[in-house]
Image 1 (cartoon, rainbow, N blue to C red):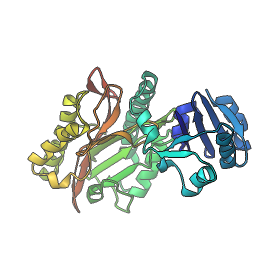
Image 2: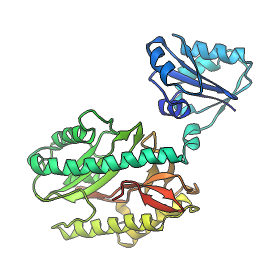
Image 3: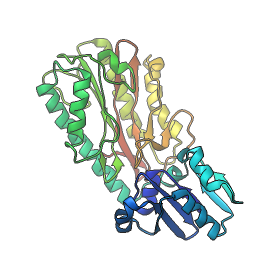
Amino acid sequence: MNYMLKDENAIYYECGYSCDNALYIRLGSDAFFITDSRYTIDANENVKDAEVLIDRDLYGCAHKLLKKNAIKKMIFDPKEWTVDGFEKISQKNKIRFKAVLDFSHKKRIVKTDDELKIISKAARLGAKAFKDLAKAFRKNGFGKDEYTLTHMAKGILGDFGKYELSFDPIVAINKNAAKPHATPTDIVLEKNDLLLVDAGLKYKRYCSDRTRTVQADKYFMFDTHQSYKRKKIQKAYDVVLKAHDNAISKARSGMKAKKIDALTRDIIEKAGFGEYYVHSTGHGVGLDIHEMPYISQKSDTIIEDGMVYTIEPGIYVPNEFGIRIEDMVAMVDGKATVLSGN
């Protein structure tokens, strides 16, 4: 099989190294990592199972390589390439380029045992960071706005530079939590406010992802057992937790992804909150924060052992509140196992 990659994580998966200016080309049993001289030392030390080629003109180098080997067919993922970059390689030759969407993600959908160990460690580190974050917010968070709380979260989650973050954390209070991908505002955290935090960190490049929604009293922790003063919020929270727990306990290898989505959606709809559940149940997590499998109403993907994905049902009532509870699971021996261990 011949294929070419541009995405950093796709390249890393193939050869154990990537940088922000590289191409990876696989020609049958031969592989080539093409980069510029800024990365010569790192590439030669870290690239595995591929020949390192150093050239200022990555695309020109790739074009010459394909011509030299008289390549007739080549697979690529159009999501990875700019029009300009693809044209620099594809023009002026007779190669038949075949577009395969999510080419690398499809290869990576079932994790190896080594990957599962790394992802599990990332999830456990993420869970510990949430405990540290709760302590910091209880001590110094009240009276601070979402901008400040988000800044605090970035430092604590990344252990002040030790770990990269999976994405910019979401820290949302009261009505701002009704936006599933809320951005910070000047809303200030007060005692007994609803507080939603969605965040993750990377360990050895693999992502974690976790969401908790709490009532921010002086003793709060980011766990799943929460008591709210408002009955409407408590009812919604209990429904989301029931949906979350139901999907984790009943998910099985061999199910279609849309069946797992239904394990959360049916509960939320029967409780009368269906119109407020505005996203799918989950998504795969690995080198990318969003990858296959997607746990949605339309997905016919068959869930298999070794797949890792999130379970994250939510209820979002506009201008009032939002609730989401999210954990990462791996399919092990036919069942879903929570990777954080709690």
